[in-house]
Amino acid sequence: MVLASQVSIPVTSDFEEGSGISSQSVKHSVVKRPNSESSSCSPVAAPRKRIRQSADIYVVKDGKPSYEKLQYLARELAGKWKTLSRRLGFNEAVIDDLDQANEELAEKAYKMLIAWKQKVGSEATYKVLYDNLCHELVECKDLAEQYCCDKTAGNASP
Image (cartoon, rainbow, N blue to C red):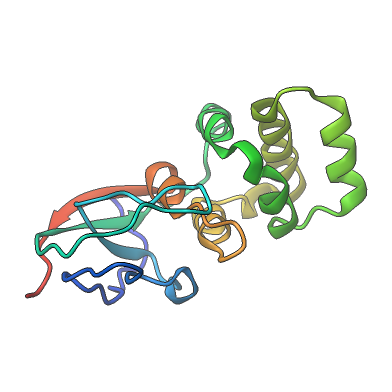
């Protein structure tokens, strides 16, 4: 397996309510995340309990996502597709066209992701998608890790 640049991002292994990794601090390709609870793409995440355990290490994949991967991602993006569209460089007119041309949220998201891939070509990488899904306005780090990363087991420091 070929790995992208591997820079660890600090992670706390003791969680208290409201603590965790800021999406603003994610600037590298390796991300550690506790196993206890996965974050949600919804704006309100469940409160975290104080827990100590091992962490998973997420490594951003090299290359570009396939249309099939984008279709699966689109199903889970739901109401975040417009925000992600803006982060990927689409203007409001294009977003409105996609919105009016498709009834289902998943289809709107999928058409947007296809348009992004066609628009930027070789720049439509897992890394770019990961960074934008993790952006503080999109708040879909769980989806970024699920679709843009490979997961390996690791240990968090006490």
